[in-house]
Amino acid sequence: MKVGVFDSGIGGLTVVKSLLEHQLFEEIIYFGDTARVPYGSKDKNTIIRYAIEAVEFFKNFKLDLIIVACNTVSAYALSEMQESASCPVIGVVEAGVLATSNAIKDKEANILIIGTNATINSKAYENGLSAMAFTQLTAKATPLFVPLVEETLFTGKILEATLEHYFKELKTPNAVILGCTHFPLITDAIASYFGESTKLIHSGDAIVELLEHRFDFYKRYAKPKLKFFASENPEALRKIAQEWLDV
Image 1 (spheres, rainbow, N blue to C red):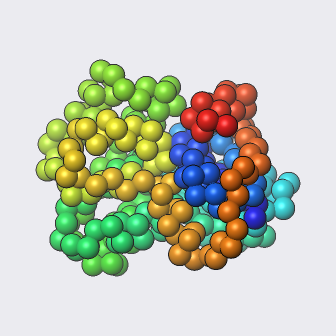
Image 2 (cartoon, rainbow, N blue to C red; image 1 turned 90 degrees about the vertical axis):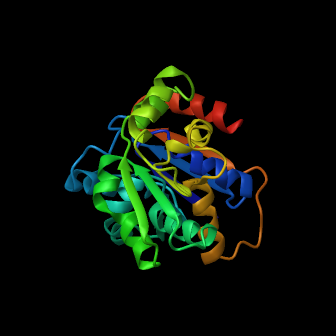
């Protein structure tokens, strides 16, 4: 099994980490569009164009599956990628909705969805969760988290001030959907802000849950082959991958 993982930048490495922990694939090809990150401030047509270009890149490899780690692309361009690709393409939005439904049984639970402007404006999570009868949904665009993660500011006063800026007027939620693959890298800060009673839904864990629900994995791969590519400064991406993934 060979899988391609696509993200607008480095955030999709959080999905790769979950794939490695569960040993699902023999080879993982990662492509981060670091030259054009973030996608969350771009218009739909631009997002679709970038997503199709990513599919073309992955055609250089004989993949069994493409995982769209970018929530913004999953919200706006998944069907276009599926039409262009020669293998199945799955996205993190569907996975996040499924994971939330499995983790939160109270349909009146207060659920907070955070993500980029584009992801939140798409209402993809709200529509998916509403279809599963969840009624108390709050969606909040938190775009400043993306550049903070890209600058590896996972702790400190700047991050703390940004959390306060976005969340100070919100009621403490029962669950927070981390609707951007960058956000798991600041999980500790978000968890500390809201407290232990708030459950966090992580895109990487959610995608593994969806994969194991949809496909049969008869073999596990303890040491998969890893290849990292980026549209700008690929060596920086590889260095970050080595640090985060311990590979």
